[in-house]
Image (cartoon, rainbow, N blue to C red; front, side, top):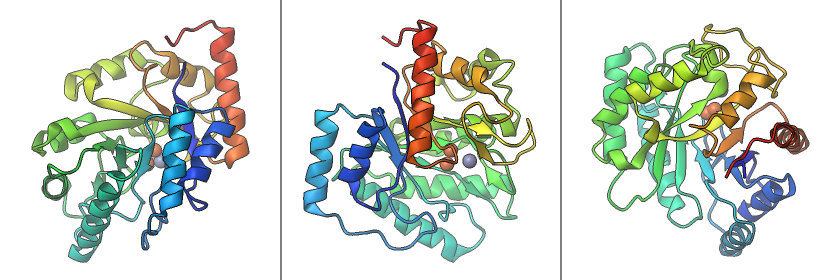
Length: 283
Ligand code: FE
Ligand code: FE
Ligand code: ZN
């Protein structure tokens, strides 16, 4: 069976989000642990957490992914921005210990003028500071589009970060199809080549999930604008090839397309229909 889900809101609680995942025929989902613009984290509700565990178990949900809010910048040149990111990131990871979630996706950071080397140093230091023995989750660095001073738009930069982290077994990567395309990795014409490159530089064993998006912006322009599946410049067939690639098909896929729940439901249905029509096995 294909592992697919969408980005869902937890504003009505974890249980409601997990039930929505089931209602749109998916077996995983991604969520922001707090308002994407930052802000305080809500206290955990005991009933909700219990309902979340139950819903996950009954429906066999897995690979649920917490996505760090966009406001965290581990490599900002401003100390107060880094201090906020550190505290919130650590709090998010601690919370996962109480939830049926053990994956945490992070945009590595933007160096905001300090340059890549100092930026990477800040990120590595913070990851080493935060990922202590009591944290059991895996932190996934997302492949970025490279807009502005974003770090992580090349596999080499991600590899340098992982290399610097002591607890490497708690580090992984989440590919984002829109970001790969806009960063200049040709997943349309040479997916095999891109995966070979990833394997050589980072190692495919580190790849733990994929954000499934089309791109509104052209190839290699370092612009980050997600489009619906088959509605952008990547196109439906290359995205299906990505989902069904022998080296990728067992991974969890998360839709981050610019739709609400109904739109994601439609996309999941479309993807499953094509896979079924083409007789592709996910066993
Ligand atoms: Fe992201
Ligand atoms: Fe993404
Ligand atoms: Zn994006």
